[in-house]
Image (cartoon, rainbow, N blue to C red; front, side, top):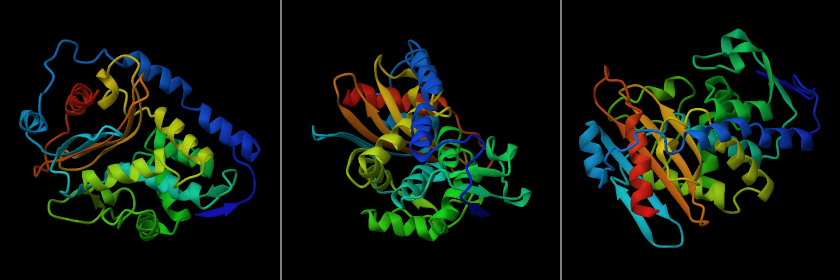
Length: 298
């Protein structure tokens, strides 16, 4: 991958491009709002994380905390799980913290394009602004690798995490091998407690500038991968800035912050895995996880 200082597919100045990046989630946000409250109508809300775990026959890790209230919902909070694509928010934050010119264009070859790259697969150059948008809104894997390349690879992301207070999360590989999720493998893993804390530092505190923190939250709010999962049956008026992930062994994750109409903020991490390489993840698990968190902490 190489970079230059030319503008990307659409000519924009840095401020304009940041503004456009903030606005890109508008359609997806409206879609999320329209879907909220429609999934699994009338289904019983799971009453505990253990019940949720048993219902879906997975190993479940959960950390959910209503900030400022002391109220938490936890289950296996210090067990390691594969991070999967939830790393992309961390990588985007690291790119923003370097002060990278978001207009700067990365050129890449066919060999750089990996599976699940709906945006980057259609072109061979992309600005960092568009790479952040593609990685967080569409979970584009090549965009994830482009962000990693900018910050020094997986080791660079791990250094960023250590520098910002996360002593647990680690990234060792790039897309798509980081999604192998082999049982017992500690590479590319975090714990519910640790990754929830990292997201809180990046999305709610002063680890990033006000502008970059708002940008990150706005792009995450426009995610197209969350609307049929954890967001699908949240109470009316709730919204989320979150990132999903999926991999082998029926692993699936969702990490982020829920915002309520009353102004409450609930930081959460739902991490799951199985030991069965032939199983397929059930997105209804994440719908029920969202309902559980809302019912217990709302």
